[in-house]
Amino acid sequence: MVEEQNPPATTSGTSTDGWTTLIDTKWEIGGGIENYWCATKTFHEDLYINAFRPLGSTGTHHTLLLWASGSSPDSESVCGPTLDQSLLFASGVGTDDLVFPEGVALKIPAGTQLLLNLHLFNTTTDPLPGISGTLVKTLDPSEVKQEAEMIMPGAPGISVPPNSPGSVQGDCTFPGDATLMSVWPHMHKYGTHMRVTHQTGAGEVTLHDAPFSFTEQKNYPITPVQVLAGDRIHYECSYMNTTSKTLGFGTSSDDEMCFLGLYRYPKLASACQF
View 1 (cartoon, one colour):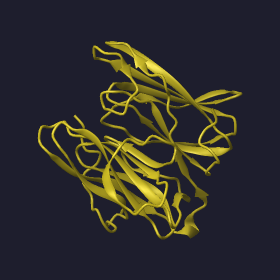
View 2 (cartoon, rainbow, N blue to C red):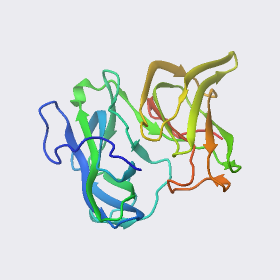
View 3 (tube, rainbow, N blue to C red):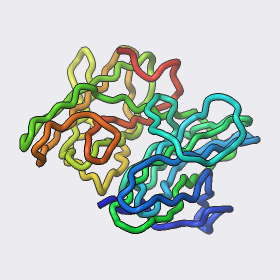
View 4 (tube, rainbow, N blue to C red):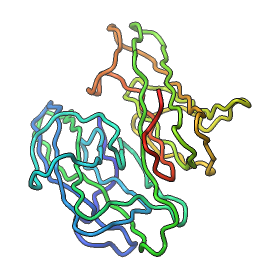
Protein backbone atom coordinates (compact mmCIF):
# COMPACT_ATOMS: atom_id res chain seq x y z
CA MET A 1 0.00 0.00 0.00
CA VAL A 2 1.26 3.51 -0.80
CA GLU A 3 1.21 5.60 2.34
CA GLU A 4 1.39 9.37 2.63
CA GLN A 5 4.83 10.97 2.49
CA ASN A 6 4.27 13.50 5.26
CA PRO A 7 1.28 14.71 7.28
CA PRO A 8 -0.75 17.39 5.48
CA ALA A 9 0.59 20.91 5.95
CA THR A 10 -0.56 24.41 5.15
CA THR A 11 -0.93 25.00 1.41
CA SER A 12 -0.36 28.75 1.40
CA GLY A 13 1.73 31.33 3.23
CA THR A 14 4.46 30.66 5.78
CA SER A 15 4.06 28.42 8.82
CA THR A 16 5.24 29.34 12.30
CA ASP A 17 8.41 27.26 11.86
CA GLY A 18 9.43 29.02 8.65
CA TRP A 19 8.18 26.59 5.98
CA THR A 20 6.56 28.13 2.90
CA THR A 21 4.56 26.39 0.18
CA LEU A 22 6.60 26.52 -3.01
CA ILE A 23 4.08 24.67 -5.19
CA ASP A 24 1.15 22.33 -4.57
CA THR A 25 -1.86 20.90 -6.37
CA LYS A 26 -5.15 19.17 -5.58
CA TRP A 27 -5.92 15.88 -7.33
CA GLU A 28 -8.34 12.95 -7.29
CA ILE A 29 -8.03 9.46 -8.79
CA GLY A 30 -10.47 6.56 -9.00
CA GLY A 31 -10.28 3.28 -7.14
CA GLY A 32 -7.45 0.98 -8.24
CA ILE A 33 -5.99 3.63 -10.57
CA GLU A 34 -2.32 4.48 -11.09
CA ASN A 35 -1.56 7.64 -13.09
CA TYR A 36 0.27 10.99 -13.21
CA TRP A 37 -0.76 14.55 -12.43
CA CYS A 38 1.21 17.70 -13.26
CA ALA A 39 1.12 21.33 -12.15
CA THR A 40 3.27 24.27 -13.28
CA LYS A 41 4.00 27.56 -11.53
CA THR A 42 5.97 30.60 -12.65
CA PHE A 43 8.09 32.60 -10.18
CA HIS A 44 8.60 36.33 -10.65
CA GLU A 45 11.39 36.94 -8.12
CA ASP A 46 14.71 35.21 -7.42
CA LEU A 47 14.33 32.54 -4.74
CA TYR A 48 17.14 30.86 -2.77
CA ILE A 49 16.06 27.55 -1.21
CA ASN A 50 17.99 26.13 1.75
CA ALA A 51 15.58 23.32 2.75
CA PHE A 52 12.88 21.14 1.15
CA ARG A 53 9.93 19.32 2.74
CA PRO A 54 7.61 17.06 0.70
CA LEU A 55 3.86 17.39 1.05
CA GLY A 56 2.17 14.18 -0.02
CA SER A 57 -1.30 12.90 0.78
CA THR A 58 -2.00 9.17 0.86
CA GLY A 59 -1.68 7.84 -2.68
CA THR A 60 1.42 9.87 -3.60
CA HIS A 61 3.92 7.33 -4.93
CA HIS A 62 6.59 9.92 -5.70
CA THR A 63 7.00 13.62 -6.45
CA LEU A 64 9.43 15.20 -8.91
CA LEU A 65 10.05 18.94 -8.96
CA LEU A 66 11.68 20.02 -12.22
CA TRP A 67 12.63 23.05 -14.29
CA ALA A 68 9.83 23.35 -16.86
CA SER A 69 10.62 23.80 -20.55
CA GLY A 70 8.75 26.22 -22.81
CA SER A 71 6.60 29.17 -21.78
CA SER A 72 3.04 27.84 -21.55
CA PRO A 73 0.63 29.38 -19.03
CA ASP A 74 0.60 27.82 -15.57
CA SER A 75 -1.72 24.82 -15.49
CA GLU A 76 -2.80 21.59 -13.76
CA SER A 77 -3.64 18.44 -15.72
CA VAL A 78 -3.28 14.70 -16.17
CA CYS A 79 0.15 13.96 -17.65
CA GLY A 80 2.74 11.22 -18.04
CA PRO A 81 5.97 10.25 -16.27
CA THR A 82 8.95 12.59 -16.48
CA LEU A 83 12.44 11.11 -16.13
CA ASP A 84 15.20 13.56 -16.99
CA GLN A 85 18.06 15.50 -15.42
CA SER A 86 16.25 18.83 -14.90
CA LEU A 87 15.46 18.09 -11.25
CA LEU A 88 15.38 20.41 -8.26
CA PHE A 89 13.98 17.96 -5.69
CA ALA A 90 12.52 14.46 -5.53
CA SER A 91 10.62 12.60 -2.83
CA GLY A 92 8.96 9.24 -2.31
CA VAL A 93 6.96 7.55 0.41
CA GLY A 94 8.34 8.56 3.81
CA THR A 95 10.87 11.11 2.53
CA ASP A 96 11.99 13.46 5.31
CA ASP A 97 13.17 17.08 5.31
CA LEU A 98 16.26 17.92 3.27
CA VAL A 99 18.30 20.75 4.81
CA PHE A 100 21.43 22.13 3.12
CA PRO A 101 24.51 23.31 5.04
CA GLU A 102 24.66 26.92 6.18
CA GLY A 103 25.09 29.33 3.28
CA VAL A 104 24.19 26.75 0.60
CA ALA A 105 21.03 27.25 -1.46
CA LEU A 106 19.38 26.17 -4.70
CA LYS A 107 18.45 29.23 -6.77
CA ILE A 108 15.21 29.66 -8.71
CA PRO A 109 15.77 32.69 -10.98
CA ALA A 110 12.99 35.19 -11.60
CA GLY A 111 10.90 34.17 -14.61
CA THR A 112 11.42 30.44 -14.03
CA GLN A 113 8.50 28.03 -14.41
CA LEU A 114 8.61 24.88 -12.29
CA LEU A 115 6.90 21.57 -13.05
CA LEU A 116 5.49 19.40 -10.28
CA ASN A 117 5.17 15.82 -11.60
CA LEU A 118 3.20 13.45 -9.35
CA HIS A 119 3.00 9.68 -9.63
CA LEU A 120 -0.28 8.68 -7.97
CA PHE A 121 -1.44 5.19 -7.01
CA ASN A 122 -4.82 4.48 -5.40
CA THR A 123 -4.73 1.00 -3.87
CA THR A 124 -8.31 1.28 -2.56
CA THR A 125 -11.59 0.68 -4.40
CA ASP A 126 -12.98 4.17 -3.70
CA PRO A 127 -12.08 7.54 -5.27
CA LEU A 128 -9.11 9.12 -3.51
CA PRO A 129 -8.58 12.92 -3.27
CA GLY A 130 -5.39 14.55 -2.08
CA ILE A 131 -2.98 17.47 -2.03
CA SER A 132 0.70 17.08 -2.91
CA GLY A 133 3.53 19.52 -3.36
CA THR A 134 6.72 20.94 -1.90
CA LEU A 135 7.43 23.22 1.04
CA VAL A 136 10.68 25.15 1.40
CA LYS A 137 12.77 27.38 3.64
CA THR A 138 14.63 30.21 1.94
CA LEU A 139 17.69 32.39 2.48
CA ASP A 140 18.22 36.07 1.84
CA PRO A 141 20.58 36.51 -1.14
CA SER A 142 23.16 38.08 1.18
CA GLU A 143 23.36 34.79 3.12
CA VAL A 144 24.11 32.61 0.09
CA LYS A 145 27.74 31.50 -0.33
CA GLN A 146 27.30 28.49 -2.66
CA GLU A 147 24.65 27.61 -5.25
CA ALA A 148 23.53 23.97 -5.09
CA GLU A 149 21.95 21.57 -7.57
CA MET A 150 20.37 18.12 -7.67
CA ILE A 151 21.23 15.37 -10.14
CA MET A 152 19.70 11.89 -10.27
CA PRO A 153 21.67 9.32 -12.30
CA GLY A 154 20.10 5.91 -12.86
CA ALA A 155 21.21 2.39 -13.66
CA PRO A 156 19.74 0.62 -16.73
CA GLY A 157 19.34 -3.08 -17.38
CA ILE A 158 17.28 -4.23 -14.40
CA SER A 159 16.34 -7.89 -14.87
CA VAL A 160 15.68 -9.99 -11.78
CA PRO A 161 14.49 -13.61 -12.26
CA PRO A 162 11.28 -14.80 -10.57
CA ASN A 163 11.54 -15.53 -6.83
CA SER A 164 15.21 -14.55 -6.79
CA PRO A 165 17.57 -11.80 -5.62
CA GLY A 166 19.30 -9.53 -8.10
CA SER A 167 21.22 -6.29 -8.45
CA VAL A 168 22.24 -3.58 -10.91
CA GLN A 169 25.08 -1.04 -10.86
CA GLY A 170 25.67 2.46 -12.20
CA ASP A 171 28.25 5.25 -12.22
CA CYS A 172 28.29 9.05 -12.33
CA THR A 173 31.64 10.58 -13.30
CA PHE A 174 31.81 14.20 -12.19
CA PRO A 175 32.58 16.67 -15.03
CA GLY A 176 34.11 19.17 -12.59
CA ASP A 177 35.08 19.68 -8.97
CA ALA A 178 32.14 19.83 -6.55
CA THR A 179 31.20 19.18 -2.94
CA LEU A 180 28.71 16.37 -2.36
CA MET A 181 26.43 16.87 0.65
CA SER A 182 23.52 14.40 0.51
CA VAL A 183 22.30 11.20 -1.18
CA TRP A 184 18.72 10.02 -1.79
CA PRO A 185 18.26 6.37 -2.90
CA HIS A 186 15.16 5.58 -4.96
CA MET A 187 13.81 2.12 -5.83
CA HIS A 188 10.37 0.53 -5.64
CA LYS A 189 8.86 -2.08 -3.36
CA TYR A 190 11.25 -4.92 -4.31
CA GLY A 191 14.35 -2.82 -3.54
CA THR A 192 16.28 -4.09 -0.50
CA HIS A 193 19.64 -2.29 -0.33
CA MET A 194 21.78 0.46 -1.87
CA ARG A 195 25.52 0.97 -1.62
CA VAL A 196 27.18 4.22 -2.77
CA THR A 197 30.94 4.81 -3.02
CA HIS A 198 33.24 7.64 -4.05
CA GLN A 199 35.90 6.20 -6.34
CA THR A 200 39.20 7.94 -7.09
CA GLY A 201 42.60 6.88 -8.38
CA ALA A 202 43.61 6.30 -4.77
CA GLY A 203 40.74 3.93 -3.95
CA GLU A 204 37.14 4.19 -2.77
CA VAL A 205 35.28 5.60 0.20
CA THR A 206 31.82 4.37 1.20
CA LEU A 207 29.25 7.17 1.34
CA HIS A 208 26.12 5.10 1.97
CA ASP A 209 25.59 1.37 2.64
CA ALA A 210 22.18 0.55 4.09
CA PRO A 211 18.94 -1.37 3.61
CA PHE A 212 16.25 0.28 1.48
CA SER A 213 12.60 0.55 2.49
CA PHE A 214 9.97 1.70 0.00
CA THR A 215 7.93 3.21 2.85
CA GLU A 216 10.90 5.15 4.31
CA GLN A 217 12.69 6.80 1.37
CA LYS A 218 14.83 9.11 3.47
CA ASN A 219 17.49 11.64 2.59
CA TYR A 220 20.95 10.79 3.88
CA PRO A 221 23.05 13.89 4.57
CA ILE A 222 26.77 13.15 4.57
CA THR A 223 29.76 15.05 5.84
CA PRO A 224 30.48 17.28 2.82
CA VAL A 225 33.02 15.50 0.61
CA GLN A 226 35.07 17.02 -2.20
CA VAL A 227 34.64 15.15 -5.50
CA LEU A 228 37.17 16.07 -8.18
CA ALA A 229 36.65 16.17 -11.93
CA GLY A 230 36.97 12.60 -13.21
CA ASP A 231 36.06 10.98 -9.87
CA ARG A 232 33.19 8.47 -9.96
CA ILE A 233 30.21 8.02 -7.71
CA HIS A 234 29.38 4.31 -7.99
CA TYR A 235 26.05 2.89 -6.81
CA GLU A 236 24.55 -0.59 -6.59
CA CYS A 237 20.87 -1.39 -6.09
CA SER A 238 19.78 -4.79 -4.75
CA TYR A 239 16.36 -6.42 -5.05
CA MET A 240 14.36 -9.44 -3.92
CA ASN A 241 11.83 -10.48 -6.56
CA THR A 242 9.02 -12.26 -4.72
CA THR A 243 6.85 -12.62 -7.84
CA SER A 244 6.56 -15.31 -10.50
CA LYS A 245 7.60 -12.90 -13.27
CA THR A 246 10.94 -11.42 -14.27
CA LEU A 247 11.31 -7.99 -12.67
CA GLY A 248 12.40 -5.16 -14.98
CA PHE A 249 12.61 -1.38 -15.17
CA GLY A 250 9.37 0.57 -15.22
CA THR A 251 7.49 3.52 -13.75
CA SER A 252 4.80 1.42 -12.03
CA SER A 253 5.10 0.44 -8.38
CA ASP A 254 5.06 -3.16 -9.62
CA ASP A 255 8.22 -2.55 -11.70
CA GLU A 256 11.61 -1.42 -10.43
CA MET A 257 14.05 1.48 -10.65
CA CYS A 258 17.57 2.30 -9.52
CA PHE A 259 18.10 6.05 -9.15
CA LEU A 260 20.46 7.97 -6.91
CA GLY A 261 19.59 11.53 -5.98
CA LEU A 262 22.75 13.55 -5.35
CA TYR A 263 22.90 17.09 -3.99
CA ARG A 264 26.12 19.02 -4.65
CA TYR A 265 27.61 22.50 -4.99
CA PRO A 266 28.55 24.45 -7.01
CA LYS A 267 26.42 23.86 -10.14
CA LEU A 268 28.33 22.15 -12.94
CA ALA A 269 27.91 22.32 -16.72
CA SER A 270 26.49 18.77 -16.88
CA ALA A 271 25.19 16.16 -14.44
CA CYS A 272 27.57 13.27 -15.18
CA GLN A 273 30.06 12.15 -17.78
CA PHE A 274 29.35 8.69 -19.19
